[in-house]
Length: 59
Image 1 (tube, rainbow, N blue to C red):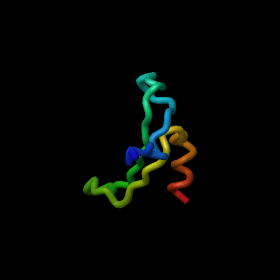
Image 2 (tube, helix red, strand yellow; image 1 turned 180 degrees about the horizontal axis):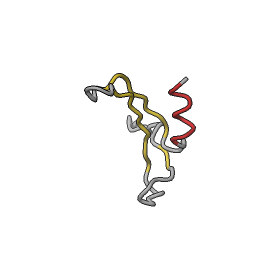
Image 3 (spheres, rainbow, N blue to C red; image 1 turned 120 degrees about the horizontal axis):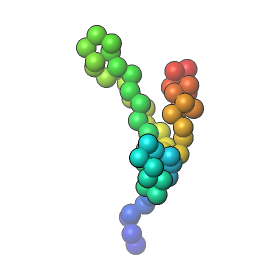
Image 4 (cartoon, one colour; image 1 turned 135 degrees about the vertical axis):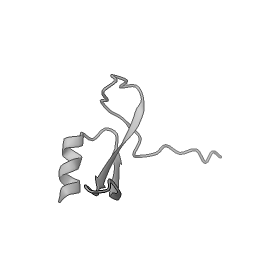
């Protein structure tokens, strides 16, 4: 029995390099404007557009 399972966040999506055959995940950060410290982060599936996910994170 194999314990190797696929990650549900790693999905094929569009990326800037045009490598649509690779799986990817999305990661967004909220940073402190003064010091650049990470206040929180959000990981999302690679087949979700950034625009769609940012509206979810901001609400």
